[in-house]
Structures are given as structure tokens and as C-alpha cells.
Image (cartoon, rainbow, N blue to C red; front, side, top):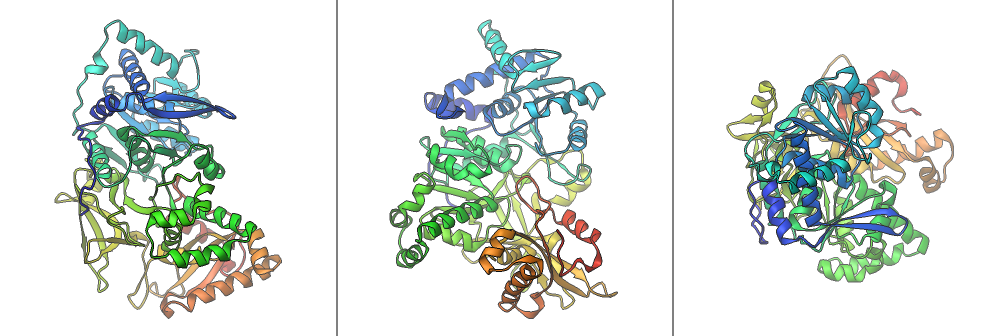
Length: 580
């Protein structure tokens, strides 16, 4: 368990958090919003809290007290104010995945029984249809973009102004409303198909225990600038990005899109970012291309060796030109939601970029463990945060077993799903479904999902994520999916195969090849090199090459079952041939 290193503000619920941090950081800038080229608008912490109080007051005035209200849209201040105005005194907030197709979105609206929904312009037509078709209990549509109430659609901006007038007239119902921090206040859908997704019931206590834990071990303060990129409906971004920034009195800026991450980091002087491995891999490739253009790769490699055992501060000074590519102010990069290649992690840290791995789940609000300045090992997710306990059960000879956790951050239940709740919560412990090992110093190493492990005829276990990290290091390979294939009538006769997504231009330039057959031979040669570095039973026996992206969640996690089903639909002779 990590020890608390820094002083932290004690809070009982999110409303308490807003009050205490609002008083402490009232005049600090909470959001810097881009209005156009070179034009920005700054909003203080005091102004944000006033808008939250006003919107919450207006929502109760609309008759939405104790109701379920959804929020959907891209990352923006209106999303965050809507979320907090719901959860801090109005009702239950239901964040929805902005990437869902229309049929799935309507299904979740029906399942969650929301009566109102905040949305951005992109979803207006879909949601108007849902309302007039009578989907679920949906009654009220609230636009984040409209400036006035028209055709039965409310304007968030107008509701805020209305709420301010109600407060001036003496309406304090929202402001004075007390929070029961142990009741369900947040409903989150797990990723998966609509019918299979579970609803995670979280409380204020769950989220606040997590905020206090990470505040006590991470060096973050009111002068930091957070870049918001990951979708806000995902609990990783919601807790570690959005809520944590407000808790610490920091500033939030919104990313213009995946291609703009490095320039946005420079533009806003970003100091803190929470993202997924794919983004850090992308940033690293951008840095490397810049160095190649400048002919400095060899020089940097030599400097890495020279400064390998130096402090992070000394490395930062030595590699200042690389830091300047990202604005020069980065002090903390947090990787979560998927497995980070330890090679990439080590590269960042060799350059003085403080990249740490965190681990968590929707069901744990989300952070279970995270690397810190004090507790850090390459390849590890660090130690559990102060309020959480973890242990490994059903260990094999290598000490690998299922990771189970206990703490105030663990969900209340899977809403209205006793069967799944009973499976996941046993004697106060949450069964994560992840396989891991814990070393003698308490550092946790995640090996893979219990469901995705491939068991061979000889009883050996293959962790696909581990092998995918190796494959993804091949130049020109953008992502990969490792799976087991039954080779005979014997269901235990399993061999390892991989589906590889490649970038044709990079592959052709890197290996001086042209055409599908030459590309196949070049990549297959690299796979053979990987096979030579591992035991024979782990060897990859066949590959599928494609330029089509794998099926993934909005946080870039590979949907293993969906990809497996897609492969099974392909022709039997696709193995070892092209699929594009």
C-alpha cells in the first residue's frame, strides 16, 4: 500500500469538494476555452461553481429532483457543469458514450430510465427522434449549444441564467440540499454490447475516496494545467482528469483532437495529462520523426546512456529540446485503461518525461494502483492507493493469479443485477477479472485479463497483451490482436496466431518493399525474429495482415470477443494471407 506523501483536502462528497476547493481557489482559472485562432476565454473556479448552483436550481425547478439525467457529447465545459449540477443536488447522473450508434444509445436511454438528457449539437436529431418515439421515460432535451428554449428543447445556457435569477429571488433548494454519500448517484455502463453491458452503481463516497487517495500521492497543485482528451463518460477521465482538476484548483483545457495533442500541450503549457497507451505511443513516434528529420537520433541515444542513472530533473535538463516539443512544462503523464508497453514507458523516463502507469476499473471509481515519485518500477502499475487493499488468489507456480481488491472506492453493485453482483463482490472483495502478480515490495504487475488468457495443450498460459506489446514494436505495425486457434478436432490443440494492422507507407519505406507479397514476407520475418526470443510453445504460427483498425472501445481497449468473431467470419484460408 502506498503511503500518503502530500497533504490533501478531506471531503465527504462532490458538493463538499466544490465548496471547499471553490473557497480555496475562487479566483484561479478553472477553464481556458478556445474561441478561435489566438482567442481564449478564461473562467474562474468561483464562476464555475456559480454556474453549477444555477443550473442545479433550474433543474429542480423543472421537476427533475431525484430523477435520472444523462449527459452525452464531446469534452467541453458544458458537459462538466451539467454533470456536477445533476450529481450535486438534483438527481442521478448517467454519462453516455458519445461513440454509440443510434440504436444502442436509445437502448441505454431506455435501460437507465433517464427523464432528461444534456447533449451537444451532433445528437440533436437522434434524441429528438427518441423523445417523440417515446423511448423510455425521456421527457426533456437540454442542448449544450442552443442559446434559447425553442421547439421543446431547452438551452443549458438559458437554464443557467434562469437559475441565477431563481437564486436571487431566494430559491436555495439546490444549494442547501444535502448529499447522502453512500447512495447511488452515478450510473455507468460498462463497455460491451448494449444487452451485455452492466450498469455500475457508484456513490459520492466511492469517487471522493479516490480523489483524496490520488491527491495524497501525486504531486499536483493549483498551478497545474490538465489536458482533457479521453472521453468524459469514461470514469478514468472523469475522476483523474475532470474531478481531480477541480479538487486541486487546477486549470483544464480541451484538446482539439488526437492529431493536435502535441501542439495543444505546447499551446496551453500543459503540465498533467491522463491518457491511454496508444496516445503515448503516438506522441513518441511524433518525437522520433522530428529527431530523424533533424538527424539527431544517434545523438539522443548516446545521451540516454550517459544520463540513464541520473534524476528525472537532470534528464529533463539534458533533453530540454524534446520537452520543448510538448511545451516544456510536462511534469506528470498518467497512462491507464490498457497495458502500456514497458519499452515505451522506459523511453519516456530516459528522456526525463515522468510517465507512470495507473490501474483501475469502472467498478473501482477507478484508481486501484498508480506509480508515483516514491513508488515506481518499470512495467508495474505501482502500489495500491492508500485506502485500498489488494491480494492475489489462486496463484500458479509463477505467482500469477486473479487480482481482488477492497476499499471505499469499490462500487455499490451492478444495478438491478444480483447475479453479476454476487459473482463480482464476495465477502467485501471485488474480483477484477485481471491476472496479476505482486512482488515482495508490494508492486503490482498486470499480466492480462482472465477471460483472454489462452491455455495450451501443455497447460501453459499465454497472455495475449504481453505478446501484442512485442508485436507492436515492429516498425509499421500500428496494433495487433493475438488469439488462439484450434488446429484439429482436439479442442485442446491450440496454436497462437496474430492479426496485425500495418501502415503500408511506413512498411514499404522501412523495409524497402513493394506489393502485398513483399510486405507479408518482411513482416513475417519480423514475427520469426520475435519467435526466436521466446519459448517454442509461445511461437506465433500464422498471421493475418490488414489495414483496417481493430474493433476497440472509446478508450482504445481491444474488444477481444468482437475481434475474434470477426476473424471467425473470415474465410478459413485467410490465415497467413492478406485481409484488406
